[in-house]
Image 1: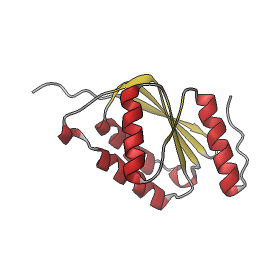
Image 2 (image 1 turned 120 degrees about the vertical axis):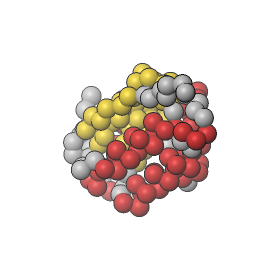
Image 3 (image 1 turned 90 degrees about the vertical axis):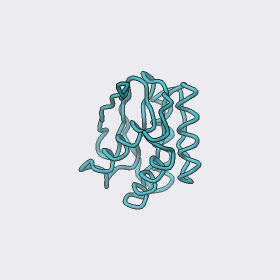
Image 4 (image 1 turned 120 degrees about the horizontal axis):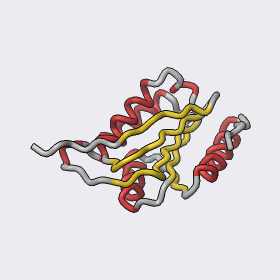
Amino acid sequence: MPERLQASFEFVHEPPYGLVVRWQGAVGLSDLVRSTRAVSADPLFDGLRYKIDDCRDATGRHEPHEEGTIVDVAAQIIGESITNPRIFRAWVGTDSTLSAMFAEIGSVAHMPIEQFDALSTAREWVQEQVLNSTGIHLALPS
């Protein structure tokens, strides 16, 4: 049986309201399921207002269907949104496979995941969304 590839990710908290998930390697749907479950289990999850998947050092990877599906990831995101409806999602990167995966996940979950080329632009977008929806002005890292 071939060895299953697994991308790595790390959480970078941006207190008090943000989380950046930094990805490395070839990201597949099963990796996104793992990450989404870990975000939901994070002790700071209920207070988050944004999550940015930083995929600048990652590429998308197609997996056998049984490894993970768009519906699995979308279901996790829907669950997150029920628990924390105030969270905005974005991702940073240019990989076409990842772009297609995030677009389809957002479509199935009925929650668009905005794409940006630069982390600073993604942070500016979430800052604007949070300000418009909650009145909270985020002090973002540079």
